[in-house]
Length: 367
Image (cartoon, rainbow, N blue to C red; front, top):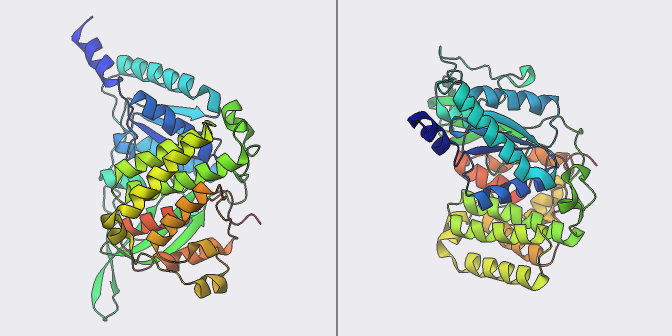
């Protein structure tokens, strides 16, 4: 065995995987996440960091175009793998590793297409191929959007940058795009878009996703509802910078989807709730984020469970997970209200807020 083979073996030992969640297929993505944790494989934070692109479900035409853009942004060697069966995720990852090893052997220096900024691969350029969503800002030669000028609240001119969050972004709703106008890192205006609207079935009860295989169909509706709540909880905790608590939520979610003994899942949820309620730092960091009054929610036709701030919503989700209450489904007006909810927040805070709202592009707007 030569030095090159040793390098190849080391390179594919812990490949970085970038999941793509098709709307309605959160359980496939959760099962993939569980399998990656068992293998101690990292989840890629951006296309520039990814070796394997794992597409969970069958994307529609608009999301497929976004996947193609992300694929082009990934440096080689790289592998693109569809994940359509919850029972065969391990085999799919094994196949991806074998293909990655072969790609290393065939051309270990295969470069990805040039891109001027790694951050653009994470969220800002995913949808540049969509003519109906083009940003009309000037572009630098490398394809990086340049800032424009606009007046702030005091009438002073400041730079404005048009960026897109989603649809392929960690802890972000699948198939959802938020087109933002930024003043610095603060969202001054936004437009919410759903890719392939109306083309995806809602991921509700245990019969909602036949593509998921037996591991998914064997889970009770109550467990699925509680697991979905835990999935949203871990999104918030991870984005808030508390990976330890996020891991607690992940263990609870995986146990619920696996049909673990109720006493064990109850203990996991008790542990999670105790940790969250005791954290003064978490309370301080989430307090006041996107505070919504019950009257405001009623006027907009939004779910009553969104009342309060980000911390209130997080605690409410934990309670609902313990009670196996399914996330409330809002109507099409939900997406029209999101720009007002995140206006004035910085990008990081907006991601926390959206994660806490529990947006599902397959469910919203289909009623």
